[in-house]
Image 1 (cartoon, rainbow, N blue to C red):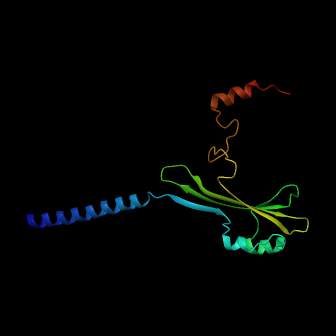
Image 2 (image 1 turned 60 degrees about the horizontal axis):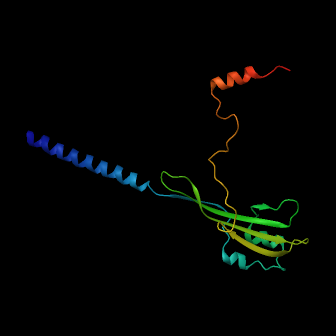
Image 3 (image 1 turned 90 degrees about the vertical axis):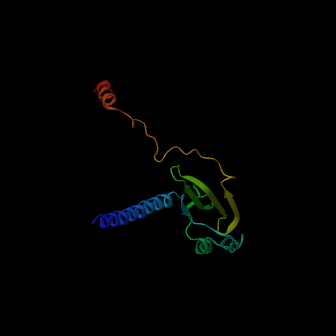
Length: 154
């Protein structure tokens, strides 16, 4: 009778060990950087199809798709931006690669110049937080009460 209990205990111990190993393996598998891409990644083949002085805006949009944004005040520029973000486990999301393609157009919507900028040639922009800070966002209960009392009625 004791032998049967001992065999059942060994089988339970093996299944428990297998369960612990599976949980640890899943935990280690989740310790991987997350990579996400945004925008339209333009490759060299697509860029070689654009010929300054010949390619029109309609042809450009047929090759690359709609631009990410257009220049303000009728500047005659369209922009295609692509960015690859990496989020290490337990870390902050950061840009791994960023490419900005600036295409200049003349008054007749014909491509005049192509400029490719990457993260090394652009301006560095300070990354603050996931959300933009707003004034009054950190008021506690007492600050809210006293700020209401300080207001003068009109």
